[in-house]
Image 1: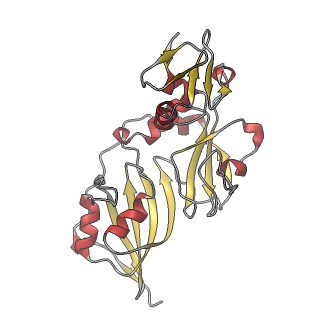
Image 2 (image 1 turned 135 degrees about the vertical axis):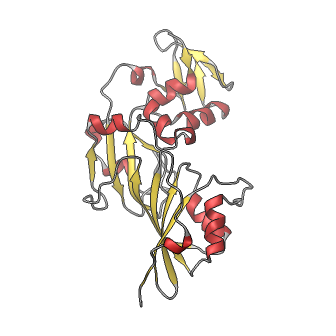
Image 3 (image 1 turned 90 degrees about the vertical axis):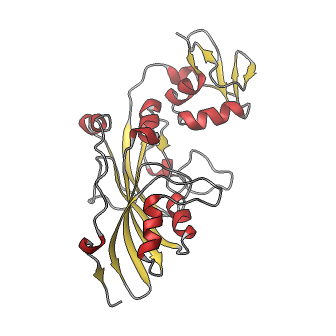
Length: 261
C-alpha cells in the first residue's frame, strides 16, 4: 500500500516526520533511483526501493516489535543519531540490542533530564506535535531575579531572536537566592533551545536546566544515565485526551522560598 514518504521514514525509525520532511526537501530521499524533493510523494515499501542518505530502508519497514525507552539524559550528550564532531550521543546510553532507536524531540547538549527514545515514528509524531498539547515540565535556574512583569511576558509568549513568537507557558516560582532564581516551567511546544532563548529575551540567562516530566511520566528514582522500558499502559496514557492546563496562580498566592545562599 502506498504511503507518504515522511510517514514511511518515520515508521522506519530514521527520523521524526518533521525531520523526514527536511530530508526530502534536501534531496536526501530517493525512490527507485530517482531523487524525490516534493512533500506528499507516496511510495509502496513492498514494491518500491526507498533510500534515505543512500541507505535502503525497506528492511526497516518490515513488522517489528516497537520499543519505548525512558532515559534520564546527563549533560554532555547530544539528542541525535550522529555527530560529525564525534560527541557522545544519547543512543550510546542504551543497549544496542534494543535496535535502532531515535530520540523523541530533543534536549540540548547541556540540558539534562527525561528523554524518550523509540523506533515508533507515529508515537514520536504524536508526542512532539504541539496540537496534542502534551506537557513537558522543566526545572530552570536563571541568573538574577526576574521581575514579575518579565515572568508575565514569558507566560503570555515572547518573540525569540528568529522572530518566532512562543506559545503561552506555565511558570511557577520555586525559590531564590540573592543572585539566582529557580522556576518550574511547562511547555506544550518544543523549539530549539526554547527555554534558554525565552529567558535570554528578558535578560536572564539560564544556568541550569532539567526536564522533570514528559506527559504522564515522572520518574524521580532515575539517576543521570539510567534508562528503563516503558510499560504498555504508560504508552497508552500518551494517547488519552490532555486536560487543559491549569490557570496560573494569582501573585498573592505564590509560594516563594528564599534561601540565604
